[in-house]
Length: 353
Image (tube, rainbow, N blue to C red; front, side):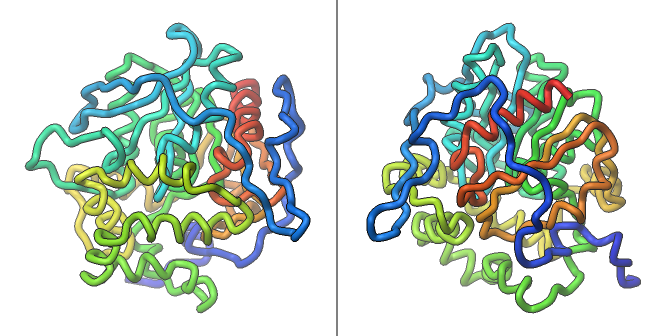
């Protein structure tokens, strides 16, 4: 295979170290930020934890959606305009535990599903491939929308969730009213995953290469709690979350399919695991890096310690109404949980673009 031209390489794989100073901090519009929402500092200079306003959702619901029986949280009026919020790895629906009530309060119907391999979401059949490839995860979103009879929705996400939201917006724009994507355009391909990065950038993907080995699979299975906690600390170095906050989310990793999904996802990216043939056409379209034309707000925290592309590398991928926001104050990778007001505001504003 010929080496890909620079502009053809997945923007996330074209990682540039450091956070680009592009965009502006979001100005509140209709949402009031409580004084304790931002991190404070102790006399010793050590950040003190941001206190979540909420620690639980209403009782979760279940719905059969494609190959999955999906567990999801719901908030807000049943007839409100729908918003679907998608979490990443290694996180769960609690990334939106403070976002959901903010949006529900202003009239949105908020749906927050556990992704395949997390929490109470289960495969209907034991024979279904535990597939973590991007197009399969994106199709889960469509299947959920169909099961809930939601024709169009505002989609929001970060990490894996932002990738799925990007894919749905790119390939099925008629289903997406607006998009909020942390770290922007995360659509990639196996081919782009073969392109070497500079050593410092490769270092940030250390866990991907660990997962490529059987030792890595066994290690993640055995130490998934400690592994996830390490990722949280590296990805959000200024977020002083407490044990209770982490443990609420870590419970989702006990899902019997969790390790299979995570390992398959990262191995597939490197071309070390096969996907399903039924997704070949979709992955072929994604390998062309399709543009996204729906109204979009992309976001980035100023202290994101996870691999992420600089905003200027993906701005041209968004061809509709578009805005980028840099959220300041030591905000890391899990932006919805670290600054729920900024994320909720972006959803409201994207819906109005």
